[in-house]
Length: 237
Image 1 (cartoon, rainbow, N blue to C red):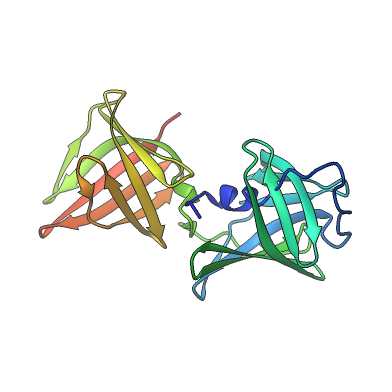
Image 2: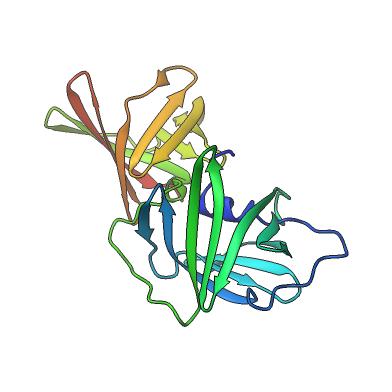
């Protein structure tokens, strides 16, 4: 599976069905708020309002991220599986699901041998945690375009001229680099926890970096040949 945002990992699950859609599951119908994500036995609590799904009795589904509608589609229940598709790109996938009272669990294989489990609570019944520096396990918090502000190395900080360099992380696991607003390179990236690996066509694989996001500021720190670099970027408008 290609790497997607938390949004795409879920909404790639939503399938465009023929006219004879299966009846919606009454237990599933309603609004569900993400509580936590578990990968390889490690669980990350989700900030309040980070992701909400609304499953309609008419087999429609709408996704909200931080209170804003981000995507919609349709779904079909087949036993203990959801066959779902994004209305925007029509991608289809099947995920396992279970409803136990006010808890919804969705399970999917994000790559061969690696399963992700997402726990949701029926809206109004959960205890949403809001931890500091939440890192999305699939890198969805990185998605978008970021403008370089400064680079710090050897104890010296250098400001980067406005618009000199930008990087764009896309939901399909690819990335693009821009210099003075013109695309200068492209490649792929992967995320494991707070570790970021970028591979470009021109320069190959860069050293693995540690990243964190606070508001609209992205910080990436990496070590290359004994020298530690820290880059600060801001989310582009």
